[in-house]
View 1 (cartoon, rainbow, N blue to C red):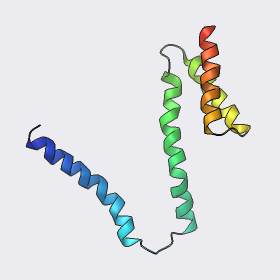
View 2 (view 1 turned 90 degrees about the horizontal axis):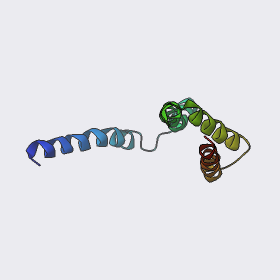
View 3 (view 1 turned 180 degrees about the horizontal axis):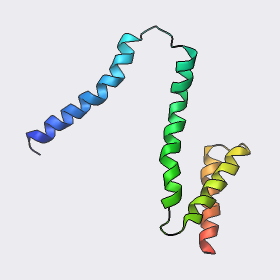
View 4 (view 1 turned 45 degrees about the horizontal axis):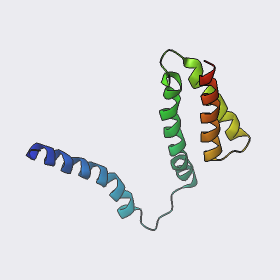
Amino acid sequence: MGPTYWWMLFGMAIVTYIPRMIPLTFMDGKELPPIVSGVLGNIPYAVLGALIFPAIFFVQEGNILFGLIGAATAFLIAIIGGGLMPVVLGTIGVLAVYSLFM
């Protein structure tokens, strides 16, 4: 690990620290408008959807039905009010049974 590695590590630390520091420094004690708070509150869900959606199609090479069944199962369990663990365990269970008969 040469000096280039350490400079790169230091640069990445600064680049990730600055966006976290600026709001804490300049927004201290100020309230955001409700529309901005709403948009910022929904960003984690949008990012999660953007990460998960492509994986539905590529979870098992050559078998798109596997991902679609898993997504439909997770969606249905979530719609009927299941929390995180029932959604995850239910989807794993359905896909495990499906993979036995595949």
